[in-house]
Length: 193
Image (tube, helix red, strand yellow):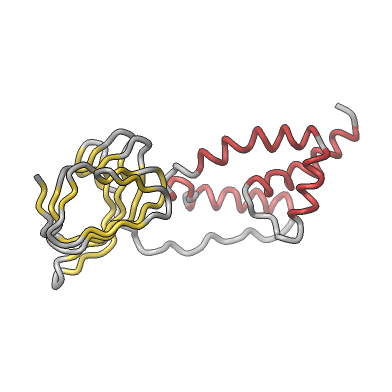
């Protein structure tokens, strides 16, 4: 490897990574994109990063959050290398509800319960190929798809899609070929079949 190549790696590798993660300041994006378009080495690096970063999208967010002990070790190492004081981890947040497997391939994380209105809000995660049982809505059901694809009867939902089920209506087949995660607000009195 030539000294120019080593210098190139040090100078641009971080910028290519930040660009792939879409976290560059907007003012730097055109400069980095122009460099990548004219540099075969940076284009190869960018193409190698794309599937890795795309894989992060399907990870639950709790997997991506570093543990307190890992954060502390990283902070000490960075401080030792930079000669600056370590960045103290944020104070622990209140305990979040845990994911609970409610059926094979279906996990839920309860967010809130309104006992007066018989309503519940939760995150629901379906594994690839999993199906939610047929059910009749006792009240309004609202669903917002966060990632993956979800079929509700003949309707296919994509990330960002919203679905509303009116009281008394039923969903015969709810399933996901890809696996998915959604926010679900529904009645606690829904009838499963």
